[in-house]
Image (tube, rainbow, N blue to C red; front, side, top):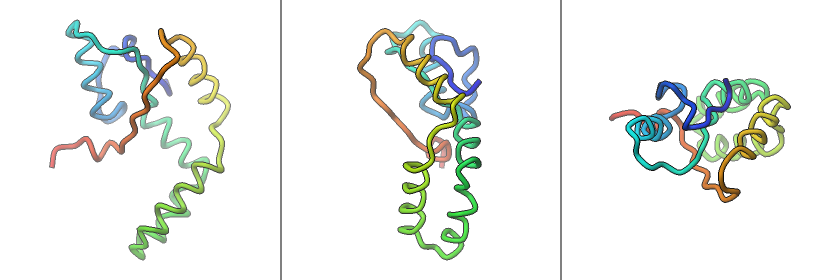
Length: 116
């Protein structure tokens, strides 16, 4: 599944939902109050990145350690390459199931969530 509603997730695999998503799922399972939310899975992100050609475009820049180029190119790719229809539809569906129209967006690479 590309998008998981926090209260429907049965496991909190941080490799698939990130560290923050994993903690929120665990808190919900413990009965703690957590705002309504959803997680776009890492596999959905990876599919989007492949579809948009992210790796082919930024790996040469990474090899050259052109970090500004990596940032600029990644931004260009993600702003110019629309979500595939399946992910877009799933995201709209999940958003409309939420209890409030106000949302906060938190994004990080799963590597940022790992212990040092």
